[in-house]
Image (tube, rainbow over all chains, first blue to last red; front, side, top):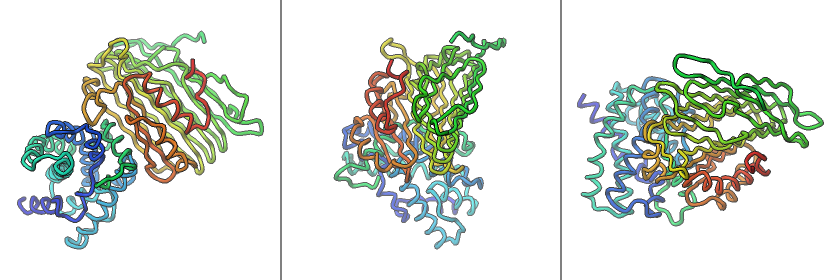
Length: 207
Length: 276
């Protein structure tokens, strides 16, 4: 159990070489457009992405992959924009390359939540814990984008992350009991922000 | 059209059932109807048959969708055929009895080198509505599709909110059997509150998904970007596939952004029912 948590902490740490820090999933545009100006606005955005957007759908894909389902094409087709598709593919490739090299896991390249789910299943790590840490890491990435761009103080950023922790826990529990039929997203503005990010100049993040 | 809606009386609520099954094929004289069957509360009309492209107008003679209704549309475009499908009027999802859901199931099969445009007018969600829609599009080799699904959350001009409703809206786009785009919108409860969140709609009462698959997607990207307002975006998600999302204050505002985009992607004017 402790060993499993340590493995997850390593895989989903910002230091794990998947380049998570390079992506904002459209948040850079939302901040540039003035939609997010403080910790309150950031909290709402992160809650939306986790509960109604990429967070929940990634957790559902992760759980399906953990159960051994073939979800590669579904995971690709569910990406609403070119940048989001590239992000999930590149992070997935980097993750599977690293767990192959370090843990010897037979995980082929696939979208990011899919390879994380497969790697956890191969190590016998519980799906709910894996999804919870995955969601928390996704939230932490968004918070770090906002800390740099809004900008927010480090303490404010950590307070936002702490406030969405129970949400990560709830979505992970729901995702562990979900099927692919539960995939859905209604973060229309986050999708639009990701589309508009393609032509944003200058930009710091890759999505 | 004088056909009476087919009603199945259950203990819960009368149910409307309707289906259209259509196959069109290409010939020397342009695209022609090879098979047409309609049943119950749904009809297809063909106002324009004077060119290569055929236009089908779907009519819901029940006047809307409510709990327990079942509608089904099947359209098959044979090799090289060219069809535009629209609706005679905006669709209305009316209040449903508790536990009753209206279902609309559409399957579009586009053969090799065929072209199909799915351009229904808006679907308006009323308070208390419960709607489940499935739109499945299968593209063959060299086929192209333009798919538009506009949604309106209540009639804002009439001050009607949608404080309790259920929507499950699914679009599946496949090429050669492989999914290339999946859109899944599931919302339940106070849809206006859901749409007021910063990453969902910031208070928008209208939205539309627009998909363009086929040759020419790359070439249209820059022009499409240039005509979209700030509340919309478009992306070349993968080679040969454009996906756009639009948000707007209301249905009027949505049309102002949507119509030029459809004209650009369809290389044609809107079908007549949109303009009257």
